[in-house]
Structure formats: structure tokens, C-alpha cells
Length: 74
Length: 363
Image (cartoon, rainbow over all chains, first blue to last red; front, top):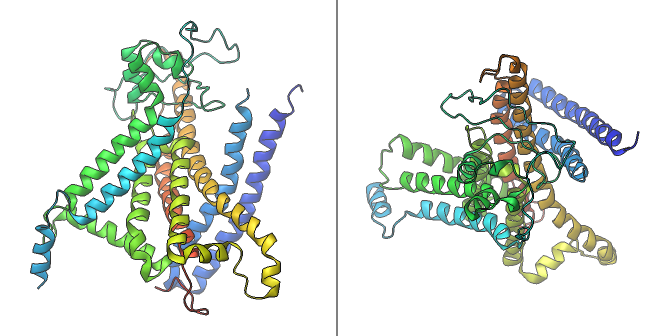
């Protein structure tokens, strides 16, 4: 393989997706539990969950964007 | 008494009412921030002698365009007969596939083959070069004009019993007001124009790309970086204005109160400064990555849908990107909300704390 970066970039993306999947699972799981405990607060918990999910997702997006930056040389 | 207040609001002098003035000022500021880096960038066009022959001959690893025997009518109607040429644009680094957009089509009309060129500098006519170079600011300007006219019309002739459009505008602005004041506290009212405009502007920019023949300006890094820089400067300026220079530096040094605090200043100060710079970076990249990712996803799936039926040589294709349009509607709203919320939180963090032991963000 003459260009190791073509292996490294999808691998990096996969690892980032893995980490963000774990994080999102924990966040949303905690939110579900909280919603089950207190159904009258579902609206506020849902809002906070969506916002938290956007932050966690952003980490994978950073890797995605930097992948394009690294591929820019090609 | 309320009738008198409403009359006073209606009969105020000036072209625009106050909320619309604020919205318009905010949008104009955003327009300056968006347009200024691009206008000031002195990218020289290629010297006149080097009109390179455009096309795939230079780059053997660019695959041929997916022509599929002609034109693809977008699913929104066959009257837009743009070719789904998937163009590999080297300007932004790496492959960035585009749908055909109105500006590119106009540039193609002005100079045939203009939109196929690598970069705008190869276009010969100045009109085409302008159109290709300032494609995204043109869309941003269009959105700004649209929003300004819309909100100015909505804030005119305020009635006691609001009509539907005034109702919508009032609900929107009141919702933003409550939201921002919920995070910052009662002094948040002064920040609502900037942050609210930011939220509305970003949301409309994100949504714009889903309209056929239009492109989201936020799908390029320049737009989101411009807005993040705007927020960064505004936050620092507000911090200095509210805390004073000494308070600002005190805050950056980690608020040292005792000997241990003062001893840690050489550690805390660079840390905080780097953190202050990391915040707009993350804001810009988050929004850019999300919107560009969505657009790329749409283009790739639409191209897939076209190439599946390519054997028929008819201008048809499966609209395989349809579910992703709904996903895009959701994620762009969330990302606009997150951008606005984060900017609000950054401002809330630099507010002066009066009482230690009292938490802000109390509804």
C-alpha cells in the first residue's frame, strides 16, 4: 500500500464514531432513565438530551472535517 | 393604556420599528462579517497568459461526470433542467460535490462551460469569475435581504390583536428572548438581538440548501468561521465592557484569591487563553461539519439514485436522498440551536458574578 493515509483516515473515522456512539449511548440512556423517573419533566429533559447529543456528535464531525483537510492534498 | 403604548409603538418615527431595526442591524453586521474576509482576500487570478484548458485531461484520477444521458429534473419539478454534474472542486481542498445551483447555472449561461472549471480563476469573463468566486456571499446576501424584509414587514403596524404574521414573529422573538434570558439571567435582554439574529440567520442559511438550485452558505468553512469570529469578538468585548480590563484579566487568570491562586496564574492564564480561542474554533467546525456533511450526503445519494437508472438514458432517477432531507431539516435546526446556545453560554460565563453562592440560569 503506497499511501498509508488512505488506510488511516477511515480507521480514524471509525474509532471516532465508536467513541461517540458509546458517549451518546450513555447520554441518551441517562436521559431515558430520568424521563422514566419523572414524566412531568420530559420536555426539559428531552431538550437537554438533544443539546448534549449535538455536542457529543460534534467530536465525530471534527474527525470527518479533518479527514477532508487531510485528503485535500490529493 | 395598552392602546396608547401600541399607538406609540406604531407612530414612532423612522423607517423601521425598533425590533426590526435591531434585527436589520444584526443582519447587516453579519453580512459585513461574512463578506469582508472574502472581499479583502487578495487572491490573484492566474496570469493572463495561462488560460488552462479546462477539463478532465489534467487530472487522470477524476472520474467522468455522471451524465446519465442528459438532464436530471430535481424531484421538486422538472422545470429546473440542471445537469447533475458532480463537480470536483479543488478550491476547498479535497472533493466537494455540488448540486447545480442558480449562481453556477447563471455563470454557465454567461460563459459556457464556466462551472466545469477548476476554480474561478480560469473563467475568462469577469462576470463569470465574480459569480463563481462570490457564490456563497451572494446566497448569504439573498438570505439577509429576505430576512430583513420579512421581519421589517412583520414589525410594522403593530396591532393590539395581532394578525397571523405578527403573531408568528412575536412568538418567535419572545421564545428566543425567554430562552436567552433563561441562560444568562435578567440582564440577558441586551444580548437577545445579537444572539436571536444569529440563531434565525444560521437556521435559515442551513435550510436554504434544501431548496432546489440553492446552496447553504454554511456549508463552507468561511461562513461559519466568520460567524464564530463575530461571536468571539462580541464575547470578549462584552467581557471587557462589563468587567473592566482588570476584571477581564482577573477572570482570565482564573480568579486568584489567595496565594495558591496567584501561584497558579502562570498555568491558568495560557490555559484560559487557549480555551478562549478553542471555543470559536469548535463552534465553526461543528456547524460547518454538520451542514457540509448533510449536503454531501444528499449529493451522493441523489447521484446514486440517478446512476441506478442510468441505463435507461432518460432524465429520471430515484429520489434516494428523500429521507435524508428530513434528517437535514432536523439536524440543521439542532445545530443552529446549539450554536446560539453555546454563544449564550459563553456570554453567561463572562458575566460579572455579584453574589457568590447564587447560581445563574434560574428561570
